[in-house]
Amino acid sequence: MEDVSPLIPTVPDKSTVAEEGQDNQDTADILVVDDEKGIRDSIKEAIQIAGYSCWTAGSGEEALKFLEEKHVDLLIADVRMPGLNGFELTGIVKERYDTDVIIITGYGKDFQYEEAIKKGASEFILKPIRLQELIVRLKRVLRERALIAQRRQMEERLREMTITDDLTKLYNMRHFYEQLQLEIDRALRYKHSLSLLLLDVDRFKQYNDTHGHFEGDKILTRLSEVIRECLRKSDSAYRYGGDEFIVILPYTHGKEAKKVAERITASFPPEDSGREPDGSVQTTLSVGVVEYDQGEELSRLVSRADQAMYTAKKQGGNRSLFAGG
Image (cartoon, rainbow, N blue to C red; front, side, top):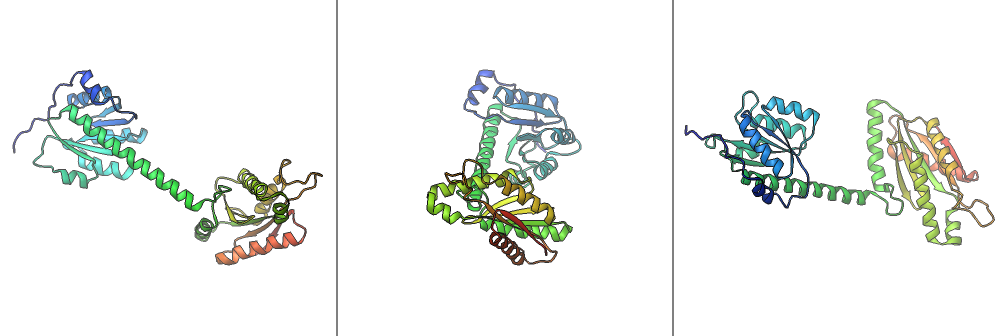
């Protein structure tokens, strides 16, 4: 086998590397893994001059211990090391962490670019390493990483737009049915309780006709804020349509759910909205409360909540009504 020296050139002067990295706008944490101290220290120095934070490890095992304590954006690893080699380390890192990997090796005839990429590496560099080239490739990997992160954020925002009501910023009815089915499946699997609240604004049409749709929208927006303030992190709220709202309460029995409904009705409307000039309350809430029956169909659960809400409304509104199974 042809002997390829694994040694790298002396670190270039700081002005040269700084110039190479002058367009770097973002910070990044980088871990260099190589069993030769001189190589990893030289790479570390070049990376730090380029403006990034850098740490080193002398083996794959040491690198994994480091990653248990600290996240890094990029890992640079030699292929041939005692114990865990660079390819094995790459596979573990890509499985466990959101970290990109650059593979370096002095044995180009034994290890090919395609093999490195197949293992999950973002880049493959042969020794002896030109540090300026390493920094250029490192920056390219980090730019691609940033672009992927931005794309994911954009996709998440687009998804949020498809499942969120524009006015209230609560989830919409489409997402409600998807989430309720998931919660029902969990309730069946783990035998835990699940309850539902269906809320409707009393005399909302009359309020809209009197004050206009702009004021009516303010009522709905304020109600969505009241609902959020009364829920736990595990609960979720949805605009069911028009002036109706629905709330999913996992791990909650019916009587506990009724207390949540009472907190919401007691908090709505606030003093500055939903009232006529003479002080009489114009808008209140009717709430139907139901607890999931093990094995009950989704449609029947929602129908029972709807019936309970209409019964509360027929009884004069401004109340919550718990309907047993």
